[in-house]
Amino acid sequence: MHSGLKRFFIWDFNQGGITDSFLVSHGSCDNPWSGDYSKEQAMFSNVNNSHCSSVGKYILGEHGPSQWGIKVKYLMHGQDQTNNNFTKRDIIFHSWERVSDEEVHPNGTPEGWGCPVVSNATMRIVDQKLQQAGKRTLMWIIQ
Image 1 (cartoon, rainbow, N blue to C red):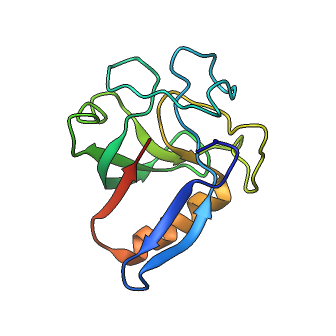
Image 2 (cartoon, rainbow, N blue to C red):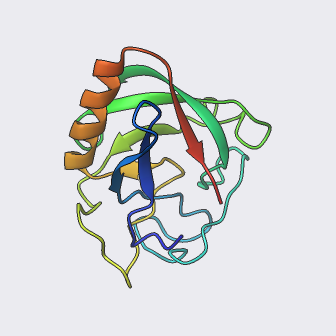
């Protein structure tokens, strides 16, 4: 899905559907950081220092301070062979000022170094939901 469209979805199993959608960034891979070069076709890798995102299922782990965005991060624990190096690669879920709250298509969302990144306002919403849930949460990155 084009990165300038809302493609980060929150699925509520109690309600049986999507409750929210937001923009989310992906990794830049070999492209310059903070551009939108792969907005139409994200590339993926599980290799250290590739600066790519990785597909697969993750358990969102420990909540902690971040140097980015609203200073909140979640560790991501890859559950598949396609993402089992994520923790070693220091890839986290966080926010960034450069990510918009509104769709930017035909432009793309600025690309980082592999982390799924949302806007500051989105992280405030997601962080509150995660804190209220008080249990392990699945994040699934698909191609």
